[in-house]
Length: 479
Image (cartoon, rainbow, N blue to C red):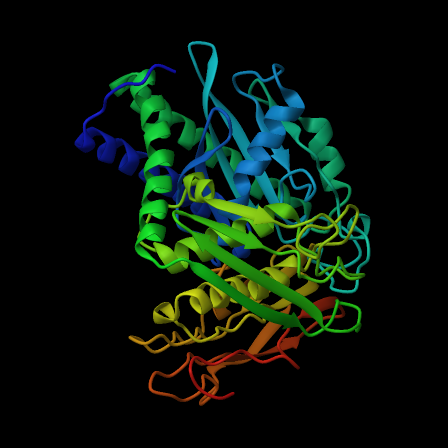
C-alpha cells in the first residue's frame, strides 16, 4: 500500500470513530441479547480488525477476549481464503483455532468495499451453555476438549446474508438452552452488521486509502509508544512464580513462571518454566496466553494506551507447546480463566520485579464461577445460571484496592439479584462484602464478596474456584 500522509487531527478523529464504532457494537449486542450473562453481566467484547485480521480498535469490555479475537479472524481467513463473500458471517469457538474456551463464541464478518475485503468486525460473547458434560460447559476435572461441549471450527453462520439453518439445527440439538444461544448468536450478528455500517460510513466520508492508512498508523503508533516507554526504563530482568492449587483433578499444585528480560526498546517474555499441560481443564490455549501478555504489558507500562496488536510488536514470547500455557490438543481448557488470572498476576509481578517503583499488591485471582442447570420460571424450559463472584484488587503506592470486582483479565459484572431470581429457580440469600478480607497496610487491599444461593429445584451444578492453599502476595510486607 502506498504511504499516505495524514495529519494528526484526522488520524485522531478516525481512530476515535473506530473505537466509538466498537463501543456502539457493544451497545447493540448488550441490548439485543437474550442471556443475562451478556445483557447484564456484559461478558462480551467487540472489535474492528484490518483486512489481515490485526486488531486495530476495541471497546473496553473483557481483556481476555479482546487480546485473542484477532487469532480467530486470522483462522477464518486461513480456512476460507478466497471463498469469502459479501454477507458472510463466521462462527468459531475452537480453542485450537484461535478461540479461548468453548463457551466464548466468536462471530466475525468481513467488510466489503468495491468487491474487496477492507476490514473485519467481530464479537466474542460467553454463551450460557454449548453442551458437554456439565451445565455451562465448564468443569475443572474434565480431561478432553470433547467432553466440554460442541466444538465449532471456523464455519459460516451466514452465507451471503442467509442464515445457515443446518448449522443452527446442529447447535440446538447439542445444547441445554437453544433459545438463549440462538438468540445471542443473532444478537452478535446484529452487532457485526452495525460495525460494518460504521466502517463503510468512514470509507464513504474519507475514502478507503485514508482508512487503510489510519489502520496502519494506529498499529505503528501503539508499537512506537510501547517502545518509547521501554526506552525510558532501565534494562534488566524480572522473574515471578505463582501456583494454582491443583491441576483441576486434585493433583499437585501447578506452577506458572514468568521471566521477563528488557533490552532497549523490546521485551522477551519466557514462559518455558511453567509446568507441562495438566490432566484437568486448567490448560490455557495460546489465544488466551497471548491475551494475557497484551493485558499485562499494557496494564503496567501504558494503561492509557489504546489496545491493539501493535503492543505485541515490541514483545518476543517464548512458550514451548506442551506447556500449561500452550497445550497440545485435545487438552481440556474450559476452566482456563483461573489459570489466566494466575498468569496475569504472575506476569505483573515479574514486570514489577524488574521495575519496583511500579509495584502493586496481588489481586484476587480465584474467579469463583457458578454454573447451575435449572429451569426458567417464565418458560419452564431448561436453562443454565452462570454467575461470577469477584474479589478485591491489590493496593498500589497511591491507591487502596477496589472492593468486589472481577479482576485482571476478566471484568465481568455480578448478576443482579432481581435478574437472577426472575430468570432461574434460584434464590440469593446474601450478597455482601467480607469485612477485613482485603488485608491491611499503608494502602488497604480490596475486599472480597460473599454470595449465598438457595437452589429451588432438582439440578446439576458445577463450581470452580482457586486460592484455597496458595494465597495472594503482598507488596513490601508480610503475608
